[in-house]
Length: 438
Image (cartoon, rainbow, N blue to C red):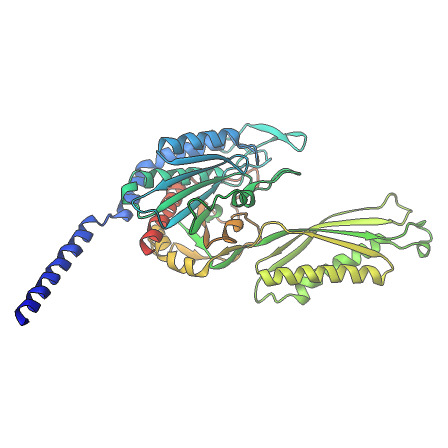
């Protein structure tokens, strides 16, 4: 018995060595491969970006963009589905294993903004928007987002046999918002099942950032971008001659006091040490002439919050404040809040697990924890369903001062194309490293 036991132990030990050596021998060096292949593909990624930049299309009208991406994904041998949420395109890459399933997302639409021709491939495109002919340009960098995701798709597809899971490449329309009366964007993509069949476990997305230097990546755990809600308040008064205001109820005066009251919600009733919040009234409509009390005034604005509970509280505070101030002046206020994009909320556990990957891509000292942004992003609809991580990729030329760099949604918007390789590497590495962890 003693001899058999020793022999068995030796056999198990030798078998363990053999298995371990086999695993090591088959272990693929994804980091080196992604770094080298992204460099080789860099000119192609830049070419894709310039094609999209010169041929922008508005939200829900990304017809030619979608065809271009669909052909590309089919040429890679992916399972491709198009026409999701009108013009969305999804490619599924199946590796050596079915799970986990990682989603990688890029947005496709451009903006009705005239581009100042700072580059030879500047847009000269015009299109119809709300009944008018308008200039169109990629003034938010979605051209770079598509090109970077295409680069990651090509890199991963070329080594699919080494991929320990499945990747869904999601090219989404209408991130900038749909035309009036239409639906679309990430919310509709989710409704139409983009996170299903196969079910996506986590999702990653990125945004080029014109005021962060090339080579840097910025991230934040928890709320990164704000929920964006529309505010409409209609103040009802009673018309009277302007020379005798006591005979009526002045809706304009009531509206003015409501605006002051709204400002105190953020400055005096909101715990700003917890998170930021913004209430802005951007439009006032009311009155017929100089000597007539306005019978009705409409206030139109936006609400931005970075915390779900604060969002709910501020909505209730607005309702109470506007209603009570109007009543105190004999008027009546109807408050309507239309929920828009949710909070872009980076799952804390997923974020913590993927920080080493982003550090590996950027190098020491180039991954930065950033402040929250009160702008909004419909990537949040995916994050409502599954854990997600959204981060920003620096696109500012190194010699520029961020104060002088043109911002998003401006005619002067500019991106240093040396940023693209960082975004390609980040998307590819996040996918393969998440698979290796899970």
